Image (tube, rainbow, N blue to C red):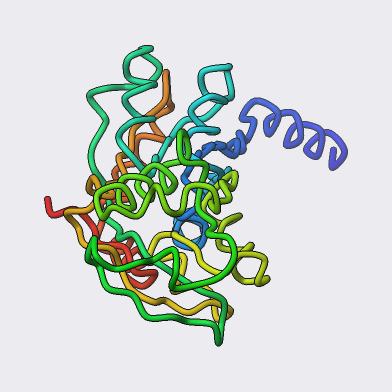
Amino acid sequence: MIRFIFLLVVSSLGLFPVYAHAEQKITVFAAASLTNAISEITAGYEAGKPIKLQNSFAASSALAKQIENGAPAQVFISADQKWMNYLGDKKLIDAASRFDLLNNKLALIAPKGRAFQVQFDPAFDLAGAFDGKLCTGEVESVPVGIYAKQALGSLGWWDGLKQRIVGAQDVRAALTFVERGECAAGIVYETDARVSDKVELIATFPAGSHEPVVYPAALVGNATPEARAFLQYLKSEQASQVFIKYGFTPVAR
């Protein structure tokens, strides 16, 4: 009798299977300058949720090309409008989900202990202010390099420096070159200068010397509802406080 009851209970439990919630993966492609901020935000967001956020950081140009080639990104945050427009023109993002998330500033840096004076005036000889190479992103494709070329050109410094410029694969690579002293100067974002104790922030470039440094964000292709919720979370007060902590300026809503 006892054995019969036991079998009956086991059998009845089989009629009501327990379904575990499968962990949902959200792949986020973000500009290299967002490494610290997005890593902290995603770690906090997935805590206690059946969600795993997988981040990929690189130059916006490289990420956009990966998406074009079929990489399974669901959220894309670019460091400029150019590469978001590139994907938009190819219908690879959800245009309705797109919004401007953050602003940043362009900064001139030097290795620790090797700072020099600068004046943002076409009459100032920046090329003569330091010896050695100037590192930034690749000036034709990487956003920070594009902004740097614009700034140097508008201030009349491009021709005197173009032969000394080292174009790195992304802004963090440029920062590393300066940290190691392999470049005597660098042009990165202000936020990158702030996360390193191995460089000196000399000055930020005048806003009018280059296009505004804006970070647009959007869903990629057929993103999941979970990815859509995370994208909206990036506009929240909690996420904004993390961005501010790292020196970004959230775009006013």
